[in-house]
Image 1 (cartoon, rainbow, N blue to C red):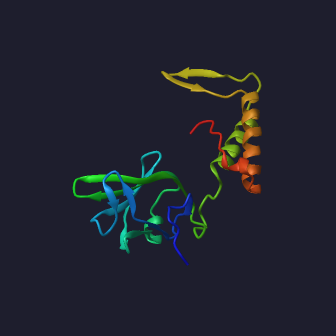
Image 2: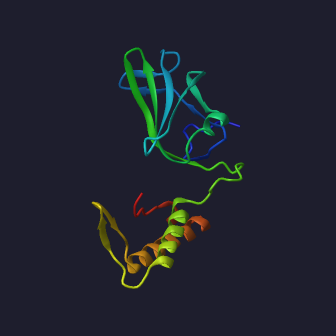
Image 3: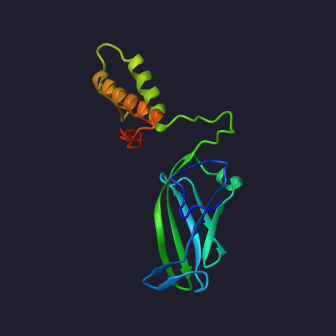
Length: 183
């Protein structure tokens, strides 16, 4: 079985991720093993709390990049930006870049496998259940400010989140477009 030629869009923590990076042309000429280039897959968590750097191994004139199961298990679940960079002496070229989501390890029985939308829906529903008559929208205590959503705002969020969760579970295209209220 041939390896894919790009990192996946999603992978599960605790699993092996492997792909190939073929030789390519660039403004610096050929970017290949035979021309003395090396590649590294850089992963940076969107919130800046986690990272990984995986060096490619020469494979013909390109590279195979492998993130081991042990190393992927160390990554925090969530979104990451990635870039594949080639380096030769003082030259550095970004060959490709994108985003990847690290999902929970399903072998971990304590893993919370809910999507962001499912988790947020539970929070919104809990807030709706705790809403009282005569709500306070904003208050300040000892210089700290707290602002809440109105029941109408919460119901609108709940409706959107329910639609997104339904779409994700059914596999529809709408499920891949995420509307984020806050993070």
